[in-house]
Amino acid sequence: MRKFESNVQFLKYQVNKEVTKHFLQGEECSEHLDEIAESIIPGPKPMTRCCIYKERHIVKERAKAVIEPLKGKNVIQILRSACDECPIDRYVVTEACRGCLAHRCKDVCPRGAIMIMGQRAYINQQLCVECGRCKDVCPFHAISDVQRPCIRSCAIKAIVFDEEKKAYIDDEKCVSCGACVYNCPFGAVVDKSYVLDVMKLIKESENNTKYRVYAIVAPAIGSQFTDVKVEQVINGIEKIGFYHAVEVALGADIVSCHEAEEFANTITERQWMTSSCCPAFVKYIQTSYPELMEHVSGTVSPMIAIARLLRSVEENCKIVFIGPCTAKKMEIKEDDLKGDVDYVLTFEELQAILDAMEIDLSQCEETSLDNASYFGRLFARSGGVSEAVQQAIEVKGIDADYRPIKCNGLDEVVKNLRLAKLNRLPGNFMEGMACKGGCIGGAASLSHGPKDVTEVDKYGKLSKEENSVQATRVFNLDVVDLERKYPGMEEKAEEKTEQ
Image 1 (cartoon, one colour):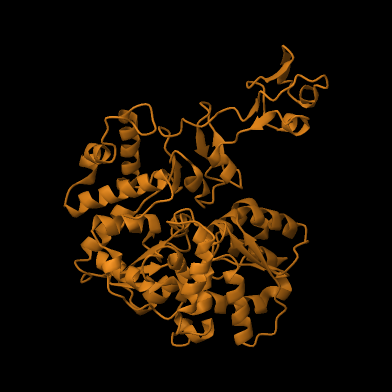
Image 2 (cartoon, one colour; image 1 turned 180 degrees about the vertical axis):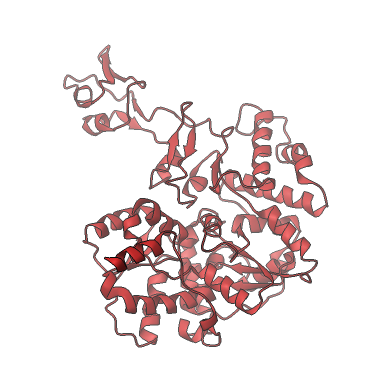
């Protein structure tokens, strides 16, 4: 069995695996919630909670999130029953407090929340607004800052508290990057699983005779199943019941060529332009910097590009994206992209399906991959998009002053967008990646680590195509719509024309 990074990841895997097993047995999964919970939490002693009954209740809630339709608009949600173990009070005076005479902590507090009792400082949590000034001025560093992992992981402050001090997500701010999903140590934050929907889609295809179900696989696949060959993973995916597995890296080649042309044709007017492959990055600009949307590339993401290419060849097909990204589950719901991709599976969910079906990747044959280029496969890591666009510019012989900036994670995205708003961006092409390391650092990756970059580079070097132009030469891309139609952008364009 695969060794998982944490028990939270293992629990997610177990739930998806058990739901899949019950489906394969022809059972109505919603009628077997107790059985699923008891198989995962056998007892008699609890593992982390107060009792096995609470643990089983949480497992059932997780299973419902797999079985039932999505509730609300956001694919990232919080299980209230699981969110109850984190410390509530962020700033606390520790034993390191020496009871000094200066009382800087008390003097700097804007709400009068600090009092001195018995020569020790104390914080009245009812008055504290968590500004952190007391911590900054304490000469003994005696005030601790204990931030909830979900809040600390969210660079855009989309997680807040309700009146019971339980966390909830501000859907208006959330970009579905999944950082909170990955960082919550109690697994209270979950991404909507479409495991059951995908299995039903495959079953109802009647062995791909009514329609063909394609799996389009993200370039990050090269970093995820390192104990076997990528070609064996592709074979395993097809054994699940997919008609064929196609590389999204080929879509990345298409995007890099199209984005290179877009850059050359519009950079004089725009002054700077961003990438558009990361849906969480694009969503952040839409929600927090809508005035900068004119600088966002109008090219679709590699996932959409390859899906539209497939549909241009075979209209009556179904398409499932497999990758490390939770934001892709929101991308397919965008108004201008609906219908391009039917469902999204994560690598975590893929592993659960493979094991539920007892598909041993090490015993699988090798299925050849579509010939994406080295540069298309590099889209999986930070810096890869910039390199791919640059090689497309060079191969096409485009005369352009191309100066890329690589934003590795939302922290760097936030910083550089602030500079861009002030016209102080130190370049003219911004590669935006919400996850540290790029897609290989996606919240639903099976592994997160520096070695993943090396694995992606090794995977890229297996390509037989030298560059993106060569990889896409055999396709008629004139029949494929590679343009995004962002909500509200057409109206803005008309306003600009009238002015």
